Image 1 (cartoon, rainbow, N blue to C red):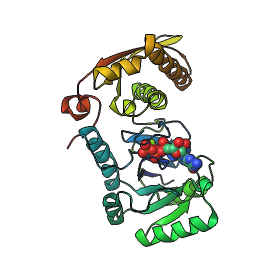
Image 2 (tube, rainbow, N blue to C red):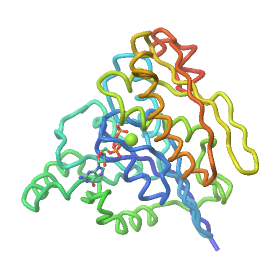
Image 3 (cartoon, protein in one colour):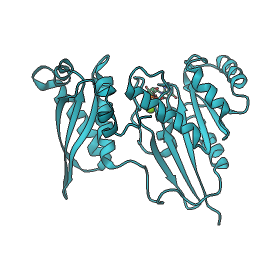
Length: 294
Ligand SMILES: Nc1nc2c(ncn2[C@@H]2O[C@H](COP(=O)(O)OP(=O)(O)OP(=O)(O)O)[C@@H](O)[C@H]2O)c(=O)[nH]1
Ligand SMILES: [Mg+2]
């Protein structure tokens, strides 16, 4: 029996639904999803295994023009995903402007692997509008197969899966057959906490935050963990903690519930806030948080 294995890399502008699609394709919540753009900051792999096939999906940050080093690293993750894809999944949606970030689209036009162009969120559109968009995209990426779908409504997902599977090359598996992701458990703890921060705080706050898990101890009936929320300025620390610590307590309790679901175990979560001035531009911090620099 021949075995197929390959990398399916999901790229596109912020907020078009890349992570939503990734989770639907993998069948697990590997990536966090919020209505705010720049939710995803890393390249995250989600692996789907059957006896005959292993598909390694990569979710990536939304494409942006970097204003600080953290964003430059986010763009690096997206660009790296253009180079090693067996199948490239370029996601757009029915509301974004077609020429947004055309510097990245120019790179997609040069990719040699097959490209599936997903027009997501068709639940927000109508037949006439969609037909017009399909035509416009076809002009821009003539070699790509265009697949309109709705990730949240799971509409047309089976067809996308079929087209992906058909284009996965023959190869031995790249990862162990029982592996679901390339990330350790702690990574998902930081992401769940960051998701709650994105949901709870306004404006610049979520973008100035990094989360680090300092300790993670698993006992028979409980996992004890200590997380550090890193901010750029003293004033942000005050906002994160909130009046009498109420804000931090609320975020901690929302995060704990989801972490318990994730591990299917009781969790004790302690959270602290620390200021590391201008960390988003400092190599030392970025490296230690797992961001690649040039
Ligand atoms: N109406 C509708 N909303 C969707 C659909 N797919 C995703 N969304 C919403 O779009 C928003 C962004 O979704 P994400 O999956 O986080 O988007 P992303 O492309 O990963 O965003 P970044 O990581 O910030 O680049 C969320 O509020 C989703 O619920 C869809 O098919 N229809
Ligand atoms: Mg995302």
